[in-house]
Amino acid sequence: MIKTIFLAGGCFWCTEAVFQRIKGVQEVLPGYIDGNIKNPAYREVCTGRTGHTEAISIRYDVNQIQLTELLLIFFNTHDPTTLNRQGNDVGTQYRSGIYYSDADQKKIAQEVIKQLEKEKVYEDKIVTEIKEATPFYVAEESHHDYFNRNKEQPYCTFTINPKMEKLKHYFSNYLNESYER
Image (cartoon, rainbow, N blue to C red):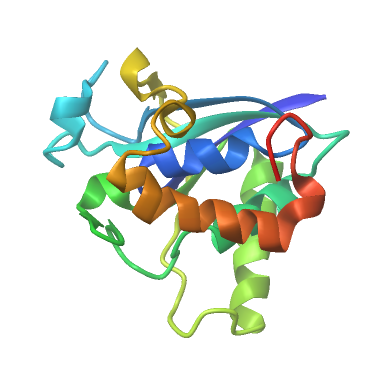
């Protein structure tokens, strides 16, 4: 069975690169969610005035990977304790969020956060918002597959490469064979 969930963990170039490499993920698209205008453009979202956050749409096969596993990868490849910030990316458009498509996804997201907090995985409180998905607007083509096309760009080298190393180190058993380990 194929399901869709929307995750926001800072810049969508980072989250797209992470989840493209996971077994059971059928499709990852960068875009914008949870805002107050229709069909926003990147230049508008970057101002922080549209209310959108940079996010990814993930279509995944529940027979190959469970949402709990996707969320553990999500929480371990960004900082869910900083409000409206991921590293040097600052603003509401970089907030941490889980935007669910059904009640089961909401429940699982709440349970994962509760467990991470119970185990004191993070020193600070998790501020990831959990909300019902609003319309998702696919980003402009230039943002698709960004990391794979621009690995030598400074942003990719300094921001995304460490996430890739963490992914390989802690989640190698979830990596899709089509990507180098």
